[in-house]
Structure formats: structure tokens, C-alpha cells
Image (cartoon, rainbow, N blue to C red; front, top):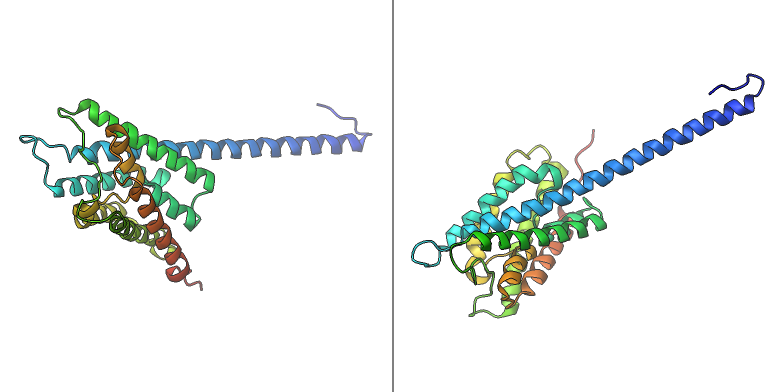
Length: 259
């Protein structure tokens, strides 16, 4: 485009239009990048939760004479697959795999509210599909396998407290890993989470199944139609996670010392 040298106003208009065009293009690129990045995170949560249910619940399938597997099998199975998933998906979405962890992340300010909702939907969808895939390949009737049900000897309120305490402990671990003070101690995070899940599952498994994860409980419940005390596995983990995150944020969190 050529502009008459005798018309400086036209030159200014051309420059302004060019600047507007460049700004608009840059804004569009940033918006597209943000949109693509968020979708990568959402897909990551879907796949990681799917794998959590497939491999975690696979460890609970009876093999010898249709006798239940020893409880430690499920605890170690879920612990190892959590470690596996954190290593693979942690740098993409944080590898929440759990609405309770996503709620803690929202309270922490690490993700936005719309993204948190998208994460939770993806996690629930992944859990449902994951358990469905396991049913498709299993050699036995999966009815009751890998279900999280309160022990008959305890009340639903007691089960609620157990799930809240277990998930609060998990939420403290999440917050500790997000704490800037620990930013140089991230290499062993997958191992830490795997061991934590295994340990908490061994501790709480005999009482409630140690879900600590509403999506993990939703998948089996939806496919088997067994909804006994299911609300406990939403209210307990979400409340426990929220309380722990708020406590850590306002009581324990401190800024790094600055020179």
C-alpha cells in the first residue's frame, strides 16, 4: 500500500490500523492458545481418571476361586496407578483424577471455576467409562467388585467422618506440594502420592472402602446400580478437602523469604 507524502493524516491512519490489526491477531492467538491448553488439561483429566478406574479396580477383581482379593491388593493397585498417572499427566493438568483435589485446587487459586467444573465432568466421565471398560473385559460378574460401601457395623455419619478425615489428609499433601516453599522438592511427588494413597487406603479401607474420590465411587455405583450410602462419598471427601485446603491456605501457607 502506498500513501501520499503530502497527507500525514493518512500515514497515521495506516499505522493505527496496522497496530489494531496486530493487537487483534495477537489477542486471537493468546485466546486460541488458552483454549487449546485448557482442552489438553480436560482431556488429561478424563484419560487419567479412566486409567485410575481400569487399573485400580482391576487389582480388586477376584482370580482364585472367585474369592475376594486381599484388601492390600486394592490399596497397592490404586496407589501404584496414582503414582503412574501423576508422573504422566502431572505436568499437563496436575493429574487430579478426583473432584476433591480439584476443589482444593480451586480454593488454592490454581484453576478457575469454569475449568474446575470441566475437570469434574471429565473425571466423572472417565471414571464411568473406565469401569465400563473393565466390565467389558472381566471374566466374572463385576457386581459389587471395587465398590465403596460403608461397613454395616458403622453408621453413615461415622462413614462420613472417616471419608472426610482421609480426604483432608490427602488434601494436606496436595497443598504441601503446591506450597512455594516446596517448589524444589517436586522430583519425588509421584512416589509420595502413590504411597499416601496406598497408606490411606489400608487405613480406611476396612471401614468405608477409602474412596477419598467421588468420581472413583460414581463409576462402579452407576454400572452396578448399588447406591448404598453413595452420598457419603461426595459430601465427606469434598468437605474434608475444602476444610484442609482453607486451613493450609490461611494458617500454614507463608511466602518465601525475599532478600
